[in-house]
Image (cartoon, rainbow over all chains, first blue to last red; front, top):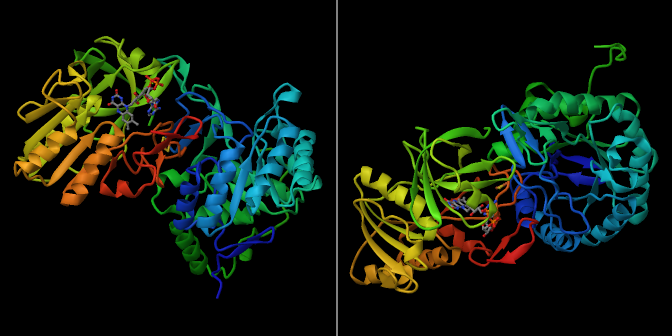
Length: 311
Length: 253
Ligand SMILES: Cc1cc2nc3c(=O)[nH]c(=O)nc-3n(C[C@H](O)[C@H](O)[C@H](O)COP(=O)(O)OP(=O)(O)OC[C@H]3O[C@@H](n4cnc5c(N)ncnc54)[C@H](O)[C@@H]3O)c2cc1C
Ligand code: FES
């Protein structure tokens, strides 16, 4: 009998809904295979660009009081090395592989999606939280037309299902979700990190060499829940990988209630040994204690109140 | 954990390029653990603990960040984040410490901790030449080797190690830190003779806390699963062979 946690995402079967998020302990095949062995339902590789990238100098990641702030700068070996790593991961992981890509122009997104398809990942995740050089460095994730342009280009380049990873650093994430759905996206990953900074008042400098970075960890869970809920409330139908601050099984139950179809786990992977198998056990226990027989039972009760009031 | 400004109370020049910094910090760290040292405006780099109570770091100036660190003076503050990682298991009745170059810093600290526990200690301290030799561990019989014979015996630390075995010496554990090929050779010798071997490995580090994956060896993370690894490291295909550079491209050691 299939486990209660088995789920399907864009036609791909996951033996559990927990997906290693991009950028955390995933920079080569050995680490992807390790996460799979530790129980992840699927694993996402670190976002790769066409050419190798050095990334930012240190400090690139700081963790303090339950919040992580990072600006690693998407360092990576470039597409050629990445294809080899993904092929190796595919042979050994035994779970679906999601290949994450990012670029600074629509043309490069097209080429990346086309080239990475050679490694036959089960899904391609498109990281659009990066500056568009053709548009004065505005983030692709920041406006609906740019996000849609990337989605169109990537869909043309590949027949593999694609998930667009949305940024919460926007006025209206649901508008962008709609635009990428209309442009043909198969799935949405929500959310990427929340913009922020730490400053050291003795050094009188920002802590990160990049000055600003992205927040993650349990404190951003409410931001992620609201984003996913808002995307659903506004009628987006494609599956959503709910990501942001999930660290225990019950967090995942909350994320399913918000409308997610699968769960991305990032920052928590640094803190807990055997995170994925623990998350599965915790979610199963939570479900059985509360008489939920299937993940589909985890949905909000609609009692008609309008959410458009000011806070 | 944020970088904390920590006052330098004393600076000891150990060799032309290596200085040991003592700090106004009484916290304990296990030998083998490390701190991230932030030079605001420049970089943040990992440095092994070379002593505690007071905390000390032994820094070899070889590139932009470490040379800048070695310009710090007594009374100034360094920004430290740690202790991080997994250190040596301080077990054994008779232990040998083997250090190559600045790698002797954490080994010396481990030997002194073992002496406090009543263990018999011995050391092999190796370097290219006499200018690269750190100060030996007090109260610990030490064999010195240099590649050019400018101090101690001419040769490698592994020659001295085999010499000790030939003369019938027995150890339950070897603590070592230094160039990776040296440690690999020691691990192979220990494996053959069924002796415990604990090595401190180095990889290019970014986060230092198990997030970015940059410091991977085999499927382990040096910053989080290590830096201390035992003989099991011999099963990593990349041990003593290749490592990831800052872009995470694989390059020979
Ligand atoms: C766990 C660990 C403990 C260490 N302990 C000590 C110590 O006690 N004393 C000491 O002098 N050095 C130690 N190092 C090495 C030290 O971190 C590097 O010498 C330093 O980062 C060099 O930086 P740089 O800018 O001065 O030189 P660069 O010119 O940038 O580099 C010189 C050398 O240092 C290596 N290196 C550079 N950056 C890093 C990095 N972020 N992480 C790891 N290696 C790097 C390079 O691969 C190169 O071989 C340790 C490294 C690790 C991983
Ligand atoms: S340095 Fe980032 S995981 Fe080790």
